[in-house]
Amino acid sequence: MTPAYVIVFIFLCAYVSAVSSQLQIQENGKISVRIGTTSGCSDAARFMAQIRSTYDRFKDFVNYEFVPWGRTRRDENGDLVCQFRAPDCWANRVHRCALHMLEGNADAQMNYMECEFSPPYPAFRQRSILCAHAAGLSVVEMDICIRTRVGDDLEGPAEELSREPIAVINFVPFIVFNNSTNRALHLQGYRRLESVICFALADNETTGITHCRI
Ligand SMILES: *[C@@H]1O[C@H](CO)[C@@H](O)[C@H](O)[C@H]1NC(C)=O
Ligand SMILES: *[C@@H]1O[C@H](CO)[C@@H](O)[C@H](O)[C@H]1NC(C)=O
Ligand SMILES: *[C@@H]1O[C@H](CO)[C@@H](O)[C@H](O)[C@H]1NC(C)=O
Image 1 (cartoon, rainbow, N blue to C red):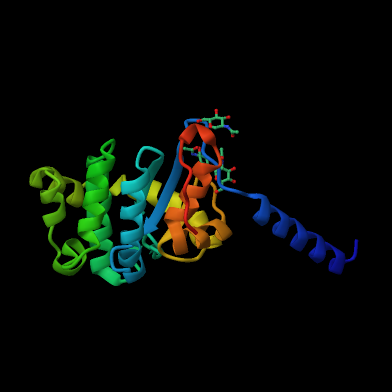
Image 2: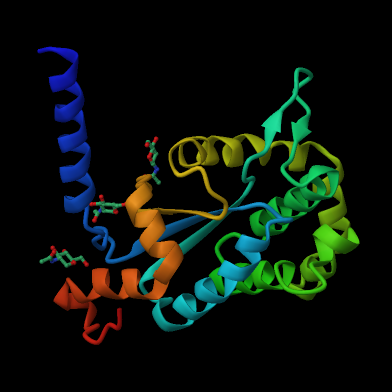
């Protein structure tokens, strides 16, 4: 094939796979939604309202996973460089610690992230762990996580989970459904998360969900 044909072929494949990759519930009957955030990001703060309303309506069917990392990269010494500088790095670290300590408690994680992305944006703007405290977490344990290896060890997984979405979607907040990065679905979800989830649920009658608005 000449290069021109190859390009047309690749384009067609990409087009067909984008159109046919309809979101469906997974075998466990749920949709997983991974959301990449960074603490200083106003788009992430604004998106929180959609996350909350979708959560309230469909929490039985949706597993949220927050990944506070965003566009963070490493300098030549391996130190983190964050999109909104040092306060962003510190607050993302706080977010990762708190989410880790709240693992298995979806309600608490949801409330916690909503707190961090609402005025006064405690960790990012005020360098405070007010939201963690409000979530009932121990101040001592939070402090240990923030200052020690415990917190360092949470970096690798967040970095790993963000790599592909940042390369492909190139936006914060990014949304990854069912552990599969898909830019078209991300865009739909960013515009109307609740509808995207609703239509996917309505597609399978076992969910009992029937009325979806676009
Ligand atoms: C999960 O969502 C992706 C789109 O991100 C889709 O391609 C895939 O088919 C879905 N998986 C299942 C099991 O429905
Ligand atoms: C509906 O979802 C269940 C899992 O909750 C699955 O076993 C079943 O195959 C799905 N049905 C269709 C038509 O996709
Ligand atoms: C998500 O997908 C990656 C590969 O893209 C895989 O390594 C990982 O195990 C998957 N995680 C889950 C929870 O399925």
